[in-house]
Every structure is written in C-alpha cells, then in structure tokens.
Length: 524
Image (cartoon, rainbow, N blue to C red):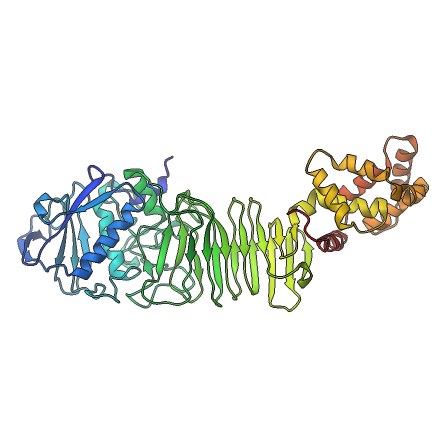
C-alpha cells in the first residue's frame, strides 16, 4: 500500500543488494572536498575512529538490520567496502553529512558518511552524546538514513516533496516548521531537523546526552521497509519499560515487533500517558505515531505501523491510557486515572476484591473508585473490569445482560441472584434470545405466584413505576393493557419493551448495574 506521507522522506534511491560491506576510514587518510559547486578542492586529513566510536556506529547499523533484511559486514580495506565512514575535525561548524545512493556531497563520490569529532554534540567516550538517546547518536542514524536513501522532510532532495505544511525559511530555522499535524519532528522521523519532541509537554531535551530519537522512528521504519523489505523481529509478550527520569540511554524509540501481546509499562509515581495505537502513516494526527511518555522525562515510545501492543500498565501517578482496536488490558495502578478504550474487548484490571470498589455508571462513561480512595478511574468505551474475585463485563451488562437484569425487576420484583443471572446471561449469548428468556421467566413458579397474579392494568402500572419511575399515562396504560388483553403481546414481551425503551432512566440503570456488579464472577 502506498502512503503519500512517506514520499517526503524518500530520496528515491537505495543501495544495491541487502548485504552491505562497510569500513572505517583510518587516521591520516585524506579526502578531497569541494564546499561549493565548481569551487576549490580542499584536501582534508581524517581523524581515526576509537573503539567506543566504532562500537556506537555498529550499534546504529544494527538498528537498521533489526527492521529490514539488511546485513552489514565489516571489512578492513575501504576499497572493498560498499560504504565508508569518515571522521573529520571541522571545529564546531557542522555535525556530519552523507551521500545518498548515486549522489555526492562536498565533491565526495560513492557511499560515504562523515562526522565531525569537534562538534559539541559528539562524544569520544561513553556517557556522552554518542550514547544511544544522545544527540551524537541520532546524528549517526540520521546520516546512515541518507546513505540508505532517506531524505529530509523539509526539502526536496532527490526529488522528494516537502512534507505537507512545512515552511522552510531562515525565519523558521533549518528544519522549517513542524508542518501539518506536527509530523516534521524527530519523534516521528529521525530525518527531521526538528529533533526530539519540540511540541511535546516537556519540549526538547536540555542536554545533548539524552532525550533524542534512539534510532529509526515510525516513518523511517516504514520507508526503509518499502525499500529493503521487512523482517520478523522481537518476541511475543515483550515489555517496553518507560523511564522514570532523564539520564543516559533515555530517548524516544519506535517499537518494531512482529509478534503480539506486547506491553508498555511504567512503574513510577509520575503522571504517565500510554497510547497503544500504532502509526497510521496517513497525513493526520498519529500519522507518525502516538507518544507514550512520562511527564518530566524526555523519552518514550511510539509504535510502528502494523505492530500490535495490547497492554498498558502504569504506576502511582494520575495516568491516561488509550486503547487500540485490539483486545486490550489496562492496569492504571493508584491515582486518578483516565482510560479510553477503543473498538476491541478492553478490560481494566483492579487489585483486590469487588467489594473494595464502587462502580458508577453514566452514558458510555464509568467511574470505578477504591473504597480507601487510593484509586479513582474514569473509563470511556471500556467493556470489562476484572477484580481478584470477579469479572464484570460492562459492555455486555449494558446491552443484553442489562435487559436480563431488567426482566428480574419487571417480572420477579427483585435484583437478580448470581446463579440465575449467570445462567440466563450465558444462555443469552448462546442459543436463547432475550425474548425467549422473558417468556421462560413468566412460566416460572416465582412469577406465577407473584406478579403473574396481578390484573393486566395493575401489572402495566407496576412496570411504569419500577422501570420508568413514573405513573402511567392514560394512553400508554390503554395501549399496553389492550395488547395483553387481546393476546397480541405476552407479559414477557411487554416487560422487555419497557426495558428497551429510550425512557428507561440512566439513574435506574446505574442502580441495577451496581446490584449486578456485586454478584461475583459473571463471565470468567
């Protein structure tokens, strides 16, 4: 499938083959540079790569082979290498550059990526900007991205269009504006000059040593896989842990995992946002991914297109969790939390028994509060809550099972008991219909010896009082009583009609759901 958004970072070319040999150019080697077209040739002597710098370059290459079939083979002779890596001392004027396939930069020909050891954003030993998450490391992956055929989103290099909405002028900096839906940022593509999360709540990192993209982001992964193919990687059930504080190794990562049942987790006391939706790759909010992050920390995760993450676990802060279209599990921990389900069968987990919590119902909104006030959750479009001793399936209760609970009140004049309610709800999701269940209830001894003894008019008046919380109007009383008298409708059908009416009050629904929710494990 073609995604026009990706064209803005596609140079339009790729390296030949998927086995790429590389070499580090050695200290004392020279390269001829031409700063401007037809300008003078300047010969530069190279700086040698130390062990740490080579280690970080290999780590950067491994991130590309973790998402594509690219294989990298190191050779000692640069003449035998597909790509070459050079170090210069240029003072503080530049970070680096690279030749996209078939192009040349500064008069250099062939696939070569060059870096400036004198840049303040470079480090020559561990614990600095060249560690993963640092600004020097994203410089490595950015330039390697060029070498593999990726372009900047803010210019038309290689014929790539400018990313929609991006204005590139001296008034907006080298990276231009963030563009439509703020997609021209480092958290969505490592090829952006707007590094990091410039529009995020913490803005950009205050340090060169942490808070930047840790490798290819969601848009980069997608275009690289279009060019070179995708591979299976990762493992099912992988836990992606959100950091609790800034520091070395912290940055923004796009999750690529070919398997399911994955988890984004945070264990601390800060406020967290966890979003399980993958990048859409469309020109829209979320096209480059949705951020999962911890407030006060310059790092987090997005999810690459096509990746399934199903579970969100957070800590003791006031957290916000977002589900996707899969069957999700949420555990928001202590605090005041907001959980947004989606189209899947979403379940929120609570420690402790059902009796330790109160549940209030509103229109598509639920409030679950711990009796000790340690946790208060507002749930939107969530279908189930699970306690240590009970599973309460909200969506089911709000539909078929709610009608069954309503029939208990209408026909048997009581709250449902756990055994009977479980029996009827299981049948309703099996071979029976709610209509047949209503009919069966009217045949029970409990009904026949109770409300079954009432005259038709009194029975209908009872339904108005119990289910609509008002007296019956003359027209309504006449309609329902005549329907019963002529045999056009049974008492079970009339009771079901009252329970399905728009007038069935949401406050009464809440009372009924509270009673149902105390019955125990309804749908294990």
